[in-house]
Length: 268
Length: 250
Image (cartoon, rainbow over all chains, first blue to last red; front, side, top):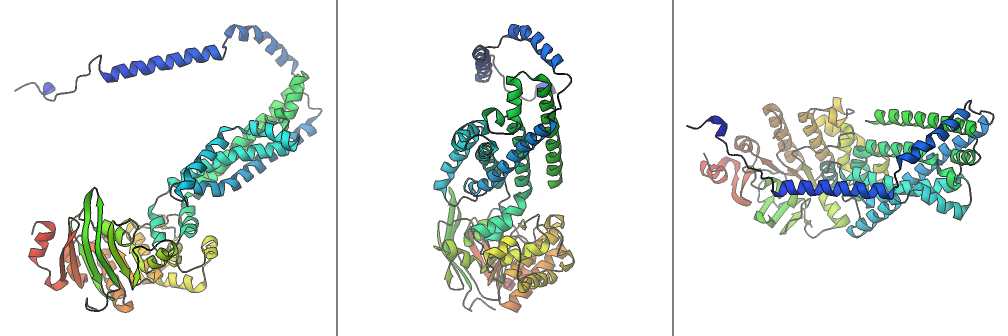
């Protein structure tokens, strides 16, 4: 009898086998991608090195932070927070009908399903920043343009994530309710909603938190909020004021992150 | 009480293939008040038959008539109305996990109540009382306000049965309703089916894989093997030969 260690034949993998060659090809492709990206992004460590003393100089000049306009800056931060909150709320309202059409198990029509997915992807593909830029031109400077920008971009994201939550819902309770003679809207509101509600609320909170962060820069394109003060201070080289603004943003974003995380934990 | 009465559920020439045929030319009828056991080995097509009768799965051909109303060919509101007359008990209970027991039972009323009540989850007193009575009937009144996912498997199955009772359908289909229950619970569930069939004249078609239990609680036994009905006999005439036809062994 042969040695037990050689009882079971195993597949032999040759050096030139398809799997090895494929692995090498993928490795080469990734290396090429990085080489091209470095070149296009004009990565130049020497320039960073020479710019460091300037940064250090500014940082030194930023101390102590300038709090003489604290009221005004806090009001602007409030504007940013309001923009993100109202924008996310509008987005969620828009997402309600969209997500039902964009989920395979609730869509009223296969013909509408694909175009709706494309619409959501396009909305998601355009950043709130870009939407805000366009809306500033349409409705004028100020936070309302920001609200519209946040709403349109986030409607795409929320509806997409919601439709995915709906698609992953258990189909069995839906079948059971369908057999009681209920039709689409009854099935969705009675059997589907209780099941997916925690995920939907969690998505909405996450988007709100994300929008508070991303809204801090909307002012740069004139869409109001703390970002506008940020841009002014950089333009006028007012570093102590800039420092105060960064601190306000940091505190606000951290607080909202914590609050949202706490609320989402409670939903589970 | 026998198959001579006008059947309330009639299935004619039902067929379904997934590549290979799963159901071939299945015809059956169940009279009001009659309890029929559908037996067959796993994979014989019992679940597919139930899903095709209810059109949760679309059959390829065949007619399904419930109390004179054709289910085949119906769609939209018409299909929903026809389905109201079939209560289906699923093998896996299919409760809405985050709702409490009484709201799961109230789901049985969804075909009868207006949309706003469903959305607001505010049911009329008569429906709420009906649901509580159904829970009482299955011995779960004390658990009425517990969330479905906090109940044991046996309790969840009883909630699912209460849901069917509250639906007040003319036909009850039950897909292996006692497969995951212990012997005592299984007997209780099957006696309950028998009682409500007698009391309310409901036609009950219930799939089982335990033949001994089927013979005890059913009026008639029909047997499915490889997607064909091969046995149709009153429970007391069910023979050893039938058993071999269905399961291949004695």
